[in-house]
Length: 121
Length: 107
Image (cartoon, rainbow over all chains, first blue to last red):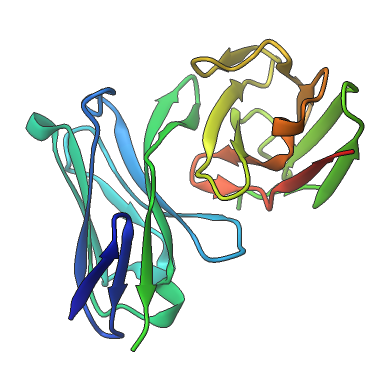
């Protein structure tokens, strides 16, 4: 069961699933790699997943591989993160970020507002 | 494996300047890094990108008080004329790797 406690806060039971969405009409996502980054309570930032401009290349951090799928819909200027088999350690604020690649480097130059996902029974 | 190293904390007085450091691990000294600011109870904000030659690309609306530079494997973020709202966590990032963050206290 997934409960929306308040805007930007989601409570889900261990083992549950949910889909995060990120859309922003004020900034362009197309032609950029897009990523999801999370921050557990009181902790630092951790990159979770990335998707290339065409949606054909996807990368994941080891701790979520097989449990998470990143996707995008450029027609809607949106990025998604489908999460399965959620665990307590997935509790974090999740941010979508735009990745600017070029010149041999990669910088996250846009951060979404973030959604707190709490995994608890 | 890319590792970014930051000091856990820094402090400076109101109106003073502070220089934060991000050190790239061996073999990665040519990498581009980005600096991000996270004020208390807020999400991160992109400040700027710094290349190995010290050139920088700032985010929209970032004050001139914030500047970046680089030397070898080190990348710096200098904040001049410190304001109370500069008290925040500062993270460096390159590709999918983040430094541990530096908590800046404005005295």
